Amino acid sequence: MFDELVKIYDARIELEKSIKEKKREFQESITSEEEKLSELKILENKLREEIYETLKKNKETAIEYDNKIISRNEKKTIQIIDEEALYKSLQDNAEKIQPLTNIDIDSLLKVGFAKKLTIIEKPIIMDIINAYNKVEGRLLEGLEEKITPFITIKNK
Image (tube, rainbow, N blue to C red; front, side, top):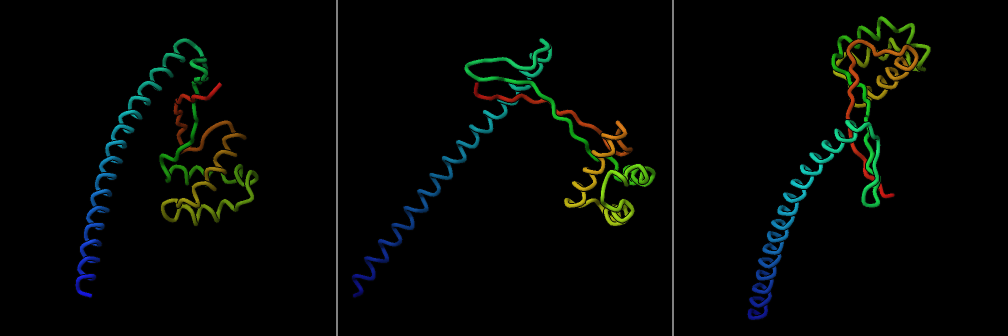
């Protein structure tokens, strides 16, 4: 009985050591591959920027290469850069904005701007801002349009 217990104990200890060593080796392997991946991403981003500029300089929007279509694009986003200025602008333009949304602007302003905008409130406000921008053709104060250039690669 004691002999059997000691044998099982020794076998369990050996297995635990083996598992721990394999986990360590596996983690080292993952870390090494993540470093390689990071380097590749940096190189890829640099090349994407160069290709974007080359396509832009040549006034091309896309090229075909190696059974792929490489396209130059721009993403336009509106960002809140000054919440106080936006709050005042929303107040000043509430009469123009109210018909564009079914949300009560006055209530939204009282709740949304009493503190920093939350993750839930920002999309609501951005929807209102986008509707206003479409109708008026301009941004409210406290906003900025950011243009982000990027390259897409698709199979042909």
